[in-house]
Image 1 (cartoon, rainbow, N blue to C red):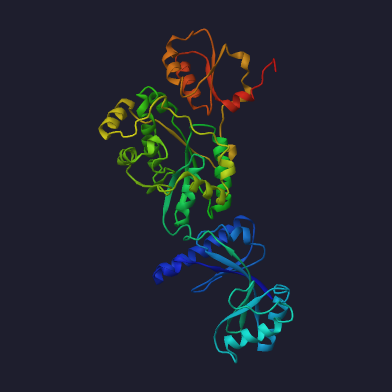
Image 2: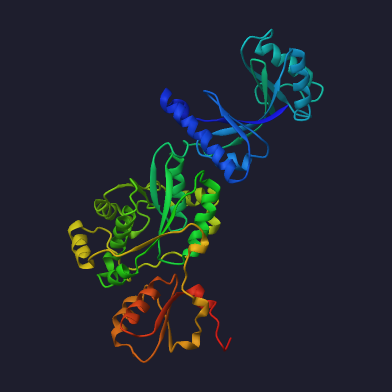
Length: 447
């Protein structure tokens, strides 16, 4: 007796013959990769309408492979006679029907000396003494057999898969990934449509928490080894905050798009949803999109926040994502909700060349962090708390600050603090910028 999983696909069956064969091959490859990445050795094979995996305890892996609509744990038997088949079916299902109303369904193909209906009736009669009667309309449990040639398959347990089409059948794309609730869901929805997604994080906060989300997401859902790019824009951001506040968020989005396009992917995936934020109004998205040279895919465009949250919980990213602080809003006042392209063009000219650094992060050991734990509070003459309300005020004061003193800037994610500190450091004033959580863990002699 062999333990096998029967894999059902959905949309693949609607494709042309050539596309269907290619998609089934990709699904088999993805299953093999997912198992191999977890150190599991299993035989995987396909027919025209099904995929089979031989093995045990594979539910947690198969339930996270795109292209699988549902799968069943089945038990197979090579039989020679109907009597042998009935004996096997009785032994297999007697405990499952115990005390329950049941029905029997048989699907059969090939040449046999019995019909499907005959087998249903005879197996149903065999199970009568164990169950609580036959009910073919609303049974508590169905006894299901598939008979093909001399092989019988008993469908024992059925599980749901994520559906969609196999990753790798619809090209590659880069996702702007912040680690918050929205961006993992956007990436997941694109992957469900067969897109192989890599990830880019523009460093606007603590990358460690963002990388935790990425690492967990990739482990659960990627049947390949995704790339994670860390993009630093410190010099560009230092100039961006000198531009008019109400345009900064729109400009920041355009900068992110342009930098991500440098990674040479044919499409860009974002977590933007229509009307969710001031930079995501229809007019602003239209202007932002006009500066993109590649296809921009926004899987969340029509979802409300609660729908996105529900998907995040389903795919297992929610609990990690809520640990990631919301990114600093570089706009310190009202944000324009209906900007014009010619105005943004003027602002981009004032901004000048976009300077950035890209690092490919292969593991957490590749991440380089400011040595916050080596900073001692008393080494600084002033500790300054910064937020969206007072950022512009402090920025205006920078060139009036006492050059004989040292300054430690602190903000929620560290972004605004780093910008202020870097400006002072350029003119020879000792300064550091760190995130609030880093500040709370600083050591000092007096502690």
